[in-house]
Amino acid sequence: MKLWLKIICIVFLVYTAVFAFKTPLIPGGMDVSTDQLQPGKNTFTYIGYNTHFDAANQQQQFFISVGKQYYCAEVLHVEDATHAVISVDLPDTLSSKTIGFYSNNDLDGTVYIRKSIDTDAFVINEQSNLGTCDPQVKTDEHSQFGYPFQIVIYETIRNLMWHVPMWFTMFLLMGFSFAYSIKYLNQSGRSEENSIAKYETLALLDRKAATSASVGLVFCILGLTTGSFWARFTWGDWWPNDPQLNGALVVFIVYVAYFILRGSTKDEEKRGRLAAIFNIFALVMMVILLMVMPRFSESLHPGKDGTPAFSAYDLNSTLRTIFYPAVIGWALLGYWIYSLVLRIRNLEIKNEEA
Image (cartoon, rainbow, N blue to C red):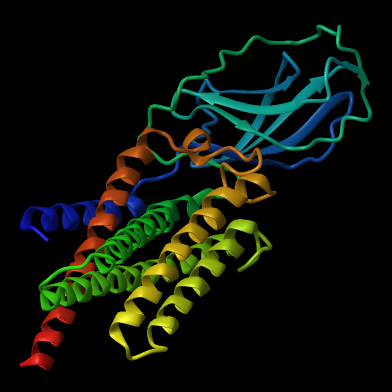
């Protein structure tokens, strides 16, 4: 690999490692200390994340949305930057069962908490128009340089810089292996006068296919490992019954079978043809299991079966400035490792022939 590509790889990976941990999450709402609202005065604690609640801030607002109506809350006291005790008076009749909890100040912008709240104590009348305030809700993206705040994911969103680029790198390397296998089958079907040159060409193509697949398999293991850790801290299980997770494991097994097949015969020509055919099958299976089938079944992964894709759900401008260099850096690292392993194997072959 050329020197300038190596420099880009190192710079992007160092940049990713630094800002993946250094960049904070933007302010978000974690919870409210109540599961039920009643007519009259309701008192509860509003819990934020990376927020800047300040008892002395006269511009700070807390309010509740009911449908399209807003009810202003009174700040009883601020415990710290992320905990504020507030109260709100609600009438007997509400226009909707959809309840939202907001905070608003100059540092945090508007922070919204999503939570299922019991409203059975109220009469629901869609024509009700009893809102008590008209707050200025900021709908634009928060100006602070930070990762998006998402319930359940929280700080584990940083794993996006490792988990997803590793899978992209695996796809890239397996794609290389697939292309070399196609070339192998194409070359093996040609009749050439110089059989030695043909043998050397086929041997090199087979070696490139096996090398790129072996490095790709390493990234597959890394992707499974980082995915399992992510699942544990977001979905509560090291290996939930998710079609994309299960499909990734099957892909791993298929490529392990590819290398078992390669070791099943010492006949180089037979091994090369069998491996090339199986490698084509393996890539088709990978595409079906990881890109096609999860879209037609229930999955916890973003972008599957109605679940919003992370690009539309939580990939803000800050995350893009780190995520895209991470993808490029990991892809270059994968190709760099492939080129080094291939060079070592070529040298080993030369030493054996000497």
